[in-house]
Length: 191
Length: 191
DNA sequence: CAGACATAGTTCGGAACCGCAAGTATTGTG
DNA sequence: CACAATACTTGCGGTTCCGAACTATGTCTG
Image (cartoon, rainbow over all chains, first blue to last red; front, side, top):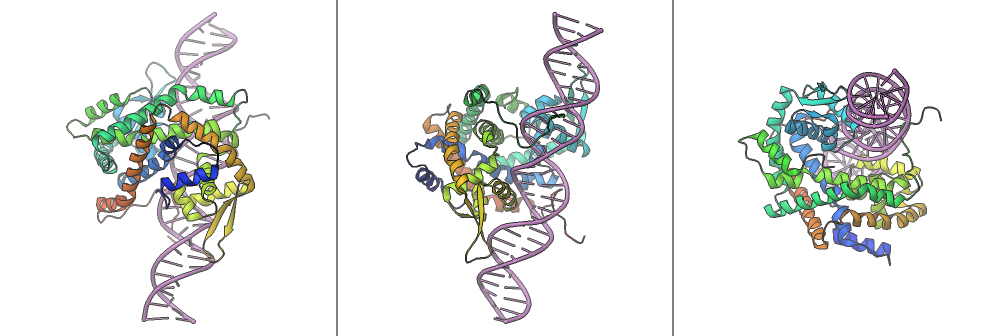
């Protein structure tokens, strides 16, 4: 995954490329490879335990969230799973079609929808999660227990910070110029 | 991003769910939220600096790799960017169509293709990267400089370990039963 | 040098995914 | 009761993504 260049080589090349521009090295290192690490871990988990049950990463995460918390309103499921509501609708549909998940109306508030595992889903997760956790152990083998803890703690701090201040930061950055629309996406009906 | 449940609450719920099954807490914490953190960071970067240039995360990473290393064979670009060769073909096509990237044949080995930035691509990256790095600083604000370093170092250890031992581990896990094909994916021509 | 094998890249199938707009239904409020 | 707010779904247009099949090229070996 780290290709054929080390981090040190990469930083050197970046510095050469930027010349006089000051570079924030530690922060670059702290951020730049997180996505690659996440991808590597995700692929290991997908190809070791998830694939045999024909689950995608996202499908598993959604099942996991609902499994842990029991019945859960869809908006919270999306939030906890880190996907958009629209995506959740599709993923939930896939999982429903495989008989792992069911969708219920909320008893008092008719606007809400609630997700719950079917017995099959419960059984699958009861079987799958221990295996999943075993691979989490494998993946974090090279870390001391205390390191694993502080790693999680640092990440939590970054996420909390982003949640608290990210939106304001983005607002400040773009000032008065509004965010341009994406290239893709539905267009307004008239025009 | 962390929804309305803290990590501690989540762990408690997991333990309740699993009952007697021993749970590897630190490792679970070390792994389970990395993807969520990566997503949060990615979305901040996309919506702060990338969106104004209509670049996706992956598109930016590919440009970045080629920018740093100059001309580069596509297989190495894919490896450094952490995507499959097939994905790179599509991404490179998109970037070519926007005039940021060009594709050259290799002079001596006809199988190889080489990517290089166009002058427009060079200019864009020269403008964009400092802004990107600024946001990397923002994202890692809550970390001490030494923490940022050790974070990156731990992650690097995990990735290295996966690269070295992941495939063997997956082989051991599935034993003699072959990996089932994905639900999606190309099928053999005949049938 | 032909045939086997290896390597690099592209094509393709199917799914995930986003962000937005619009639509539906329900609930809260003045 | 009109009207705003909320929750979810649907659909659009695009990108990304994997991995297997396929194509083209290079290399090794008898």
